[in-house]
Amino acid sequence: MSVEEGKKAPDFTAPTDGGGKLKLSELRGKPVVLYFYPKDDTPGCTTEACGFRDAAPDFKKLKAQVVGVSKDSVARHDKFKAKYGLSFPLVSDEDGKICEKYGTWVEKSLYGRKYMGIDRATFLIDKEGTVRKIWRKVKVSGHVDEVREALAAL
Image (cartoon, rainbow, N blue to C red):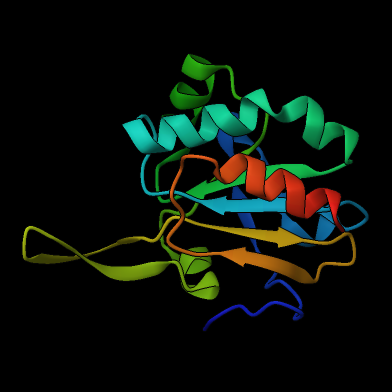
């Protein structure tokens, strides 16, 4: 399944850091920045998460909720969130069902070796639950600024 701009964002319910649960449809009424990343506490993922953390005041002014998703466990999310003071929920998608719904579980290649992994991607969802903008194969540098600009334009 693949998600398209202008269509409803697929709903999901999943465990989050701190022993919580997040149901995407319960966030309706405010924009959501749903971003998928490969692994907690790795250089690119840490840079991206800290970028969203540092931009939190701007996202709050725009009444937006940032949500990170990876296949890491809740326990690993707890450590990552505490280590970097992250202020937004991290969803644990250990079975990969959310990644499959959003088309972020893809074949990758490193030094000729093929393997499955999460494609770094961000989905901007409006307050009605419609996907307004999709970034695939995200390059971390400057990405948070792009998301902030698109959010401000909603």
